[in-house]
Image 1 (tube, helix red, strand yellow):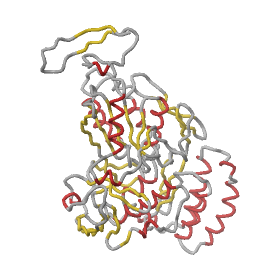
Image 2 (cartoon, one colour):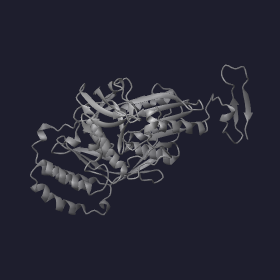
Image 3 (cartoon, one colour):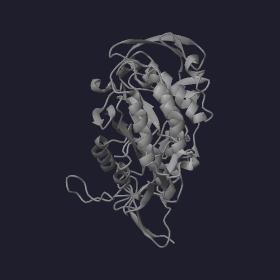
Length: 466
């Protein structure tokens, strides 16, 4: 199965190596990594890289390495020469590849160098009860200054990759044993600093396992919003592309089927099972359409929408036909980028937020003889219009910068931009739709029923527009 990006592996928690594999010679893992990539990489020319020469150069070094960690460094050097995302070696023996515990402070962070900002606080969580608020700047965790994460040795030239590296280190520091106390130092918008003690809590959601991935907590949330013009909009967000979200996503669509607009919030969603795109897009499109194509060494695989024309309880329905906004940011990656980029290319959705990570290659995982996990690319993805998402990622139709002052004032600028767009968008015609004169965007002699506001005695009018 195709899985998403390394963030799934890393952020999910501790990787556990089978004890029986701990004594396997590290060189065996080097050979498996090289051979796996040699057999499966989608480009048989390796982008001009002489893959056999790489093996000839590095295998003797791995053979002479004094420790398993040295072999891991050599393997990572080999992977880096491919200059592609999704080639990653993760080891349960590496501090950088593991979390110090399964629980965390229930907040969302984003790197906005030179700051790390709290963008969301889980409602009714210990973090919320401790008084943490969006828009506050995180300056330290448990005595470790945020400057330690910002001034890291590894400084990618790509600003999005650098922001991720900073976020990754801060994210790790939030974790620990369930119930353990974290001491956070935060700075408010007015410059005042304070210290907050908050208990770490388990992540909410349904725990699922898949292949070599650690257990993942999958969750989907939905709520109804109103635009400034009082239009009804459904907001759906989920944190990872796993099959556990399929049913609740369909239920949320059913709830908002007659809404005036739909917002799908995929900010911070690192990807997952790319094959789910066809089914979820089928809730938004009544005809089969090609979302994109995965090119592998041996064949091409098209991702085509699967229109959802009935519900699990047997009701005949139509996919949602109104305007769709997709929200993304610099931590949106892999399957999320493919989905957002595909619907953007088809003109079915408008994308809001910040440029995605640009790590969109389909990949798989393999447990190595050492117990480490290899994530390796086995395909390339392009949208139906031929757009390649690796590198540049998805560039929003409406870029909404991260606003620390806006967060501190209680605003979600990206959601608000999407709501304003829904107000500007033509309403999708459907049976029983009530229109006011300001909603008339219909052309070509269409008969439209205009109803008075509920609660008034004004009669309905049927008109013909030209």
